[in-house]
Amino acid sequence: MLSSMIGKIEKAKRYAQETDRVTFSEFSVQFRGEHDTYTTDYKGGKWHCSCHFFSGWGLCSHTMALERILRNMLPEEALTAQYEINP
Image (cartoon, rainbow, N blue to C red; front, side):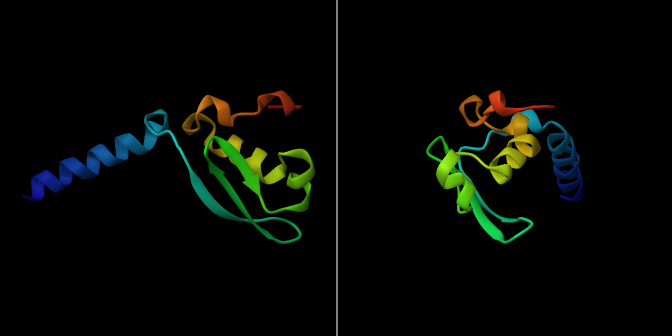
């Protein structure tokens, strides 16, 4: 039984390094910005953030940061690469 667990732990370590195995379909996080903490989520193929900037632009520094962090774990439609100045 212990050898079974050791095998699972080794597989988990390998999976953790192969982030392309994971694709988020939805999630919600609390993002501590410079001025406040915001709820930022991805659901139904769309981003949302509770910060004021997002309501006017449909993207913000919080959603763009999460795109960079999770880049290879997000579906293609979640990536708004056209705004990038220096990737």
